[in-house]
Image (cartoon, rainbow, N blue to C red; front, side, top):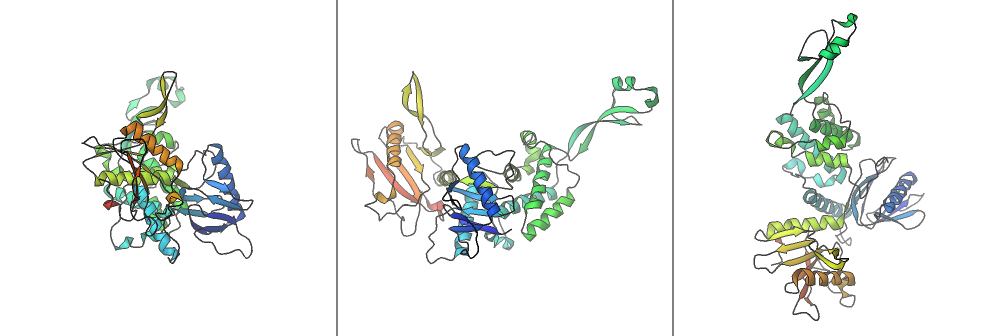
Length: 425
C-alpha cells in the first residue's frame, strides 16, 4: 500500500477514479483506510480527544496532532507540522524541513538520545518519521550488541537425572518409586533472559515487520539472527516496570526511550485491544511548549525555568482552592522579576492590525489572570508564537493592561530554525 505525507489541518478523502493527485494539504486514500480513520475518530471522541474532524461522508480534516498512523490495510499516513509557507517552495523541500523540525521536537519532548553524524546520514530527512524512529532504535541496538548485552541469574526448576543446585526434598519424597532416579532440582542459570533484553527483542520483532527502508530491514534481520536466544516479552507492562538502571546497565539508557516509543505506540488516548499498527501521534501544542522551554533553559542558565507551574487558583469553594492557573512556562529570576510565558502553536500576522493580529480574546484574558495571580502586575507576561519570515518576524508593540500599574504583555516570535538565539531578557 502507498505511503502518504500530509500536514496539520489537511483533508483526507476517499480516492475515486480520476481524483486529483495527493498533496501535502489533501490526500486521497483507499476506502478501507478511510474507514479505519473514521473508527479511530469515533474512538478518540469518546475519550475527549479531537484528532480528526469529519468534513462530510467521504472527507476528514486533521487537527493539531502530528506523527504517523498505520491502518489495517497497510496504508501509512505521515502527518507533519504546518509552519512553512507553500508559495514558491518545492514540496520535497518543505517535507524535509518539517520532518527535521518534528524530529528535533520529539527528541526534546521525549528525552530521546538523538544523535546523527557522518556522511551516511546526509539524506536522513528523506526518511519518514516512522523509518527515522526505526533507524534510531536499530543503531542503538547495534551499539549495544557490539558493547555486550547484560546477562542475569534466573532461578530454574526442573527434573534431571543428576543433582545440580538444590534438591527439592518434598517433591522428591512424594515421587513414586519408579521415579526415584529423577531429581527435582532448583538452580540458577546465568543467561541473557532479563526484562530489558526481552523488551528490546519484542521491539525488534515489530521493527522487522514494519521496516520498509532497505537498510533498516537488512540491519533488523541481522540483529534478529544475532539475538535469537532472547525470548520475547510475555508481559510488556510488567517488564517495563522491572527495567533497571544504574552503573551496570548504563549502556541500556540510550535504547530505552526508543524501545518504549516502539512498544508504547503513542496515541492521544488509550485504545488497548484494538489493532492500530505502529501509530504515533503527538499534540503540537505540547511539542512546541517543551521545545521552547528546553531552549530557554539552555539560553538562560542563570534562571530557573519551570513548565506547567501550577501554584495559584482563581477561586475558593467551600474553604478550599479550586480552578488552577497553570502557565506553560514560569521563569524564576534572581532579582524577583519573574516572568510568566504561554506558548501558542498558531500562525499570526503582525500586519493585520484590524484583525488584532490573530490574537484570541481568551488568550489575552488568560495572560491577565497570570499577571495578577503570579506576578501581582509587577512584571511582564509573554505570549510566544512561531516565527514567520514575512508575517511575524519581530515582537509586536507592547500591550499594557488597563487599570494596573504598568503591567505589560509582550507577543514575541520563536524562530524554530534558530532556537539557540531566542532570549527574552
